[in-house]
Image 1 (cartoon, rainbow, N blue to C red):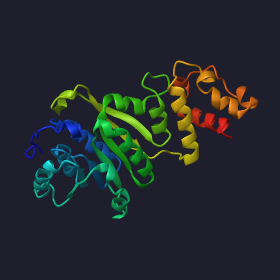
Image 2: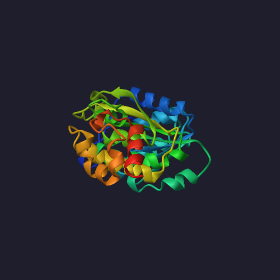
Image 3: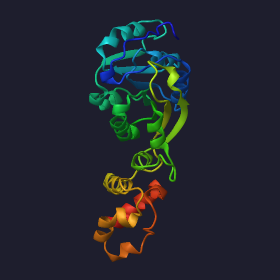
Image 4: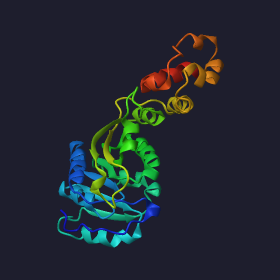
Length: 268
């Protein structure tokens, strides 16, 4: 799987780091196969080391790469016997990618994967959450700190508004950690694989937006009791709201489901 592996000059404007170890790629590809996936969009294939692992699992791969300098190398990989005609390359910014065109292309079971630059992790995740009803799921390599924030449980120091946001829109878990030494050049932080699958219950969009209002306010003042951080919402909701909940609690103690209940209480 490594004969096509090359190291390219890092383009800092794109926050590039390239995988140099194959085992994280194999593990990520195995996570996708466990979702019974036929085809994937790979975000930012770079030098193609993850791409090769996906092809080895007989997946149909649409690789979306923004850096035009890498396209020729990826096209060489696409012409190789191991690709077997299952690799398509698109030179495009993933934030402008026409997801619905890809989803409508056929009825195969699809997923999203990739080694995600930190500076666009949040918007990519938001896109994937919106697409989940049409996907089997996603397996993403992200910075460890970001992975911990998305997957954190109440009471954990990493738990915050991003945790609530993600966990109300998906089932998300931190599958395994990837040491920084697996990359070239070696970054300052470790990474991790997160696996995202569709949630068992979907909440109305209006309710989710109300939860976001509450969590942004609450976690911006996380040392305060909710009676203080959410005071404007409580006052507006009226006298009954003041006795309907234990407002001495702090934001990090509430589960995502409790934030949904709180939004229903304060915005009814």
